Length: 123
Length: 113
Image (tube, rainbow over all chains, first blue to last red):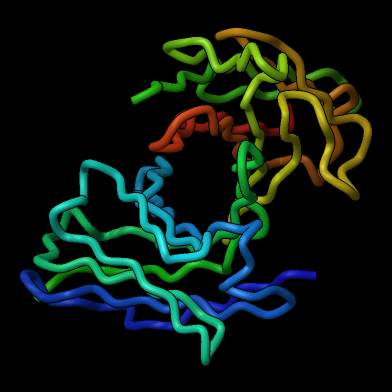
């Protein structure tokens, strides 16, 4: 059974970098039949997929256009975890951030999800 | 991007009654080569992350009660709860995974009348 555990600060100052980590148990970040996703949920409840990282003989990343210029995702195989870095944050980046596992090929539903990290961008 | 629009935004249903949530995609999410519609449904209870209920439009995730069913094709989809239980109070989201960026409906809040 795959479980995801998130870590990272709940408060980030404007213009700084938001960094979150998702630790995986029950699977491998290098699994070439999985993708590792970040999604955020605004205070009003809307869900926005931010991007994914995955291994297919080499590491690949796909990012949402809305954050492409500010986002980096990476994986640490030694710790079996993956990370999100979002720079130059503004109050509009205030949200609950979730990591989630996706499937391979066409099986891109998201399951399971991490517990979420509520991040506030404020000075 | 494929836009997902759910209706209604909220609904109140009596215990034991049927609840139906609609989801419309801005373009078809039917992949002709495998005849599958790339739609998933999630349930989010207060203070919890979303939980996968249904994928491939109508396939129930393991452990999901059979009162939950999904249907539809092309651009129009629905999630039906055949007999609403108290534990079904939640916000429900549809998601397309036909093309990145994956996109979600705005959510439908289901309450007890």
